Length: 225
Image (cartoon, rainbow, N blue to C red; front, side, top):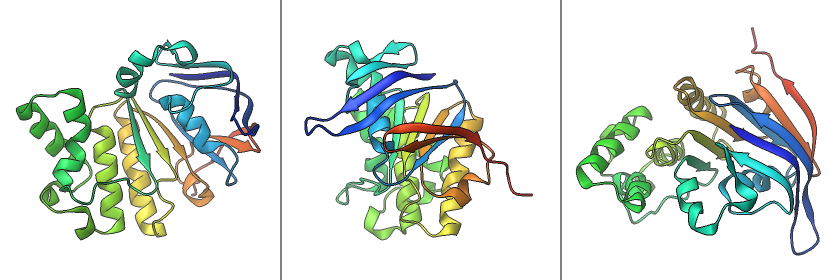
């Protein structure tokens, strides 16, 4: 569960990125976050992963008060959250297998268990046969799927995505969004920041809309007939 109560975020420059944000996302729910460039979408996601902390207000994730969470607990908090980025953030000098394995290595997972879980994650995104390739040998859509496999290999309860289809064509965008939908069907809470309104219409999920740092609407798109 993700809960924001009257959350403000002001940066040292004086810019107010978020202004009085309040919403709840239930466990196992899939929600879209939309808004213009600079509306505060990325900042909101960073508050959930504790890359940034709220200036005022309350942020609660899986029962933990993030505003007051000690720094030593942040790595443990992040193990329950998978993050997918627009630009993949893959290491080009590491194989697909090694890129996906990184979160498990950081967590100290034994090698035998690590190999099994990496292959299971790659299987879920239909890349099991490409584990020894390097990212530059893959298409853009395949690279994004590697990023998704890396995000879910730790079996997180929450999956966040920041414009995950921004660099993909419409057909590949649908494939990537379908993967998020499948993970949500397997009891993962999913929050996706996107400006692609056509994709939103396919799923009929709740949408949180930001405008200049404020939550201005919460509505639900209906799937196209």
